[in-house]
Amino acid sequence: MPNVNTLFFAEAKARTKTERQNFSLAEGTHLRAFIFHTLVTEYPSLRSLLDRALVSRNQEFVDPREDPLLIEGDEIAIIPPLNEHVLVEVTSAPISLDRLTQFVGCAEAGAISTFSGTTRNNFNGKKVLKLKYKAYEPMAIKEMRKIVDETKKKWNIERAAMVPIGEASVIIAFSSAHRRESLEAVSWAIDELKAKVPVWKKEYYEDSKAVWKENSECCMPSYASGHADHSEHHHHHREGLDDATAVEATINKKQEKEEKREDPCHKLACAIQTCLQNNGYQQSRCQDALDAYNRCVEEQKKSTRDE
Image (tube, rainbow, N blue to C red; front, top):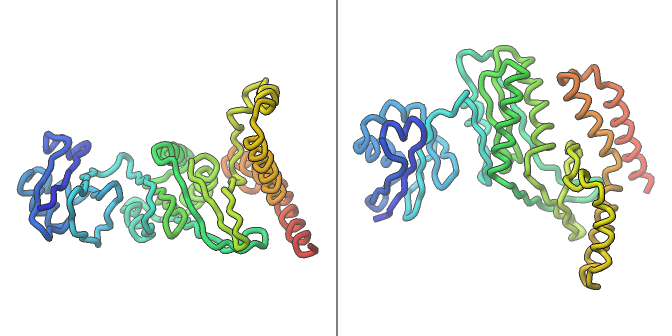
């Protein structure tokens, strides 16, 4: 008999008058039977809420079309509709565009705009064999909620969803009364996500080299840049390194220089992002910066061909 721990949040907590409860279930019990029979029998007041609530299993939202078998130690959470129709999550599971589109859709919206980030199989002429993602999840969720809040201030957004990491590396969806608001919001939000949300990507190349990538959108100053004596302290610290550590530091420094050479257009990309943010994301006001970046990219392509 599997034991399943069930968590109740917000309105679900108010209706059940408890934060959590453990259930001993019969072997072979599936999620749908547990939710709509066992829970409703125990807490009849949940019945009307379940029509609108989300359900997670082991900290992953469950697709409404799925009915997984429950096993010992599963954690089920009943999550009432999120405030302001916002869905933000980090997941390693495949991301369903249909689910997010369904989530942001509503009668008030005349347009739904989505962005699906996919993974390239090459970078600067090098074949990428696989990718590895790592996220600082609590902070990533916090930062994404900030982005959504800022988006809702800038545009008349009805509902929003942001979910990074999965078969699609990220999906963003916004709905609005008119198409312009949601289209501009999606474009702005993906740049903000790549600049500020702590999710990292490691690329594994055909030549066996692997590199943690830095987003060109990230224009935030490093913490060390605020320390006036950082360089001097770093110099004194280096003098005290043992030989092995010094060699490792030298290798890392060399790799850092190589990575910077791989992305010579980084500062121009930052200039575009800053310009767009300062001009309400009106592309026409940042055309000079965009042209400069495009010229840089074309020059790099030509340089690569010549090599």
